[in-house]
Image (tube, rainbow, N blue to C red; front, side):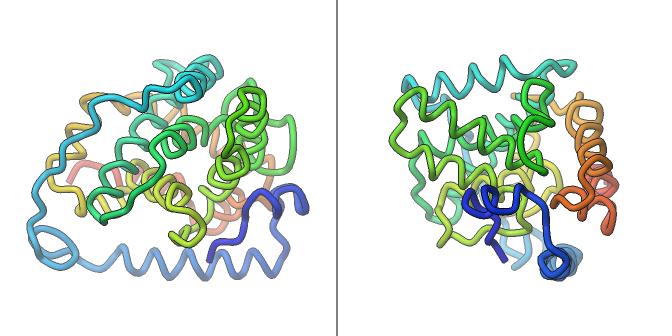
Length: 251
């Protein structure tokens, strides 16, 4: 399931209808069941994956730098936890793309990852729409348009879509990898595809110390304020932030 893009955001403002909520919950339940299946010795299929190298540096373009600065400037959380999550999301998106032979536009992928949680920051939350991912998408669209970025709509689509349960590659390689990267960082989803040591390497580069206050706290706040949004449904019906904590607990 993946239909909550920029066009939907403009039409619905980020609020799910009753039918959409049911479809969304069914998709989330199917994914949760798949994730509970035990992995083999090295992964879901039992194969031991070699560790993939992390990207050494982001794309070197004016818009990539603008996206980083926008994310950094908007984040007032302790230790810039939102920015750190966005950077970990990019690293995960990049390695999962390479692990699966996908070829995203590097600039678009980086910008989408860096901007995807703008709606959780004080500078943008509560301003437009009924969903923080919609606010982030609209803010990303504004930034891209101001800089003359030619793929502004695709960028906004990816940011709005990232809160869907899954995003098929057909909706855009970059949107798919943003969704996968964020799920890898928060829920440890698909991390086995990149090799055993990649998670440690990513979190050494961008520590997750402020995740609780910087990301999970604002997510709970958004869920309470906007119960008909996707995060509202996930938190109210499935205890999303508790699942994040459980997934990240030491084993």
